[in-house]
Image 1 (spheres, rainbow, N blue to C red):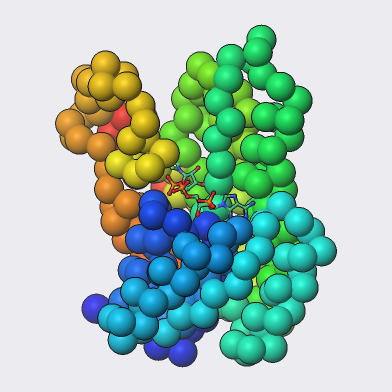
Image 2 (cartoon, protein in one colour):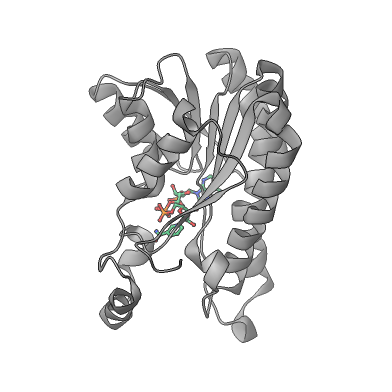
Length: 247
Ligand code: NAP
């Protein structure tokens, strides 16, 4: 069993989907989990669940796309919790449209949260992690960042963009004991995929060798592993959790 006692894990975006599962999984192995989300009520729900299960959690309201606000919140987190051992950049949005119809705002919103958000958070934690000679950064990409998906030029670009970010930062900070990896989920059963029409869901099943959508826990357990000491020799990697959809 992994033991994250004494570790501080920061997770962004934890409504009802993958972020919540990541936060719960990290808390279950003993980490003190710091939740960052744009919505206060969601934060309170997840914090309470962790407390009820006997875990440690604290929550801060922040829009990850706001550079100055992120820096300010991370300063407060470090004052209150002493350090950040793990950063999981999970917050992400979609604004789907075919490119010919896509509005500039739809492009900008997705890039601001999914890509600039990762820059903002990583920038704010990187110096403290480097001076502690320890850190784990895990960015949540997507299979569509590698395969493409009609109607998601903005989202796919952001999820492919973070792959280059992950590999570059991994090279910059490896000598200081900090690893940087990404997890690329396939089709995961969450609010984001629930709204898909049945015909679309059936067509996905045909191309997923494991014949099921993934669960948020499938992704969470991979993230926890990458944050653990068992993954100490893994950096700059993109781990696919997609049921074999893309090999
Ligand atoms: P979700 O349920 O919509 O969760 C995303 C979370 O991010 C929500 O809590 C959301 O808050 C929060 N968020 C959005 N904008 C934010 C901002 N500016 N600042 C801070 N937090 C913000 O989505 P999910 O399905 O769990 O996805 C989690 C991650 O996995 C995303 O990066 C997504 O791209 C990726 N992913 C998902 C799938 C899938 O099949 N579900 C597949 C591949 C990758 P609100 O609820 O208030 O908007």
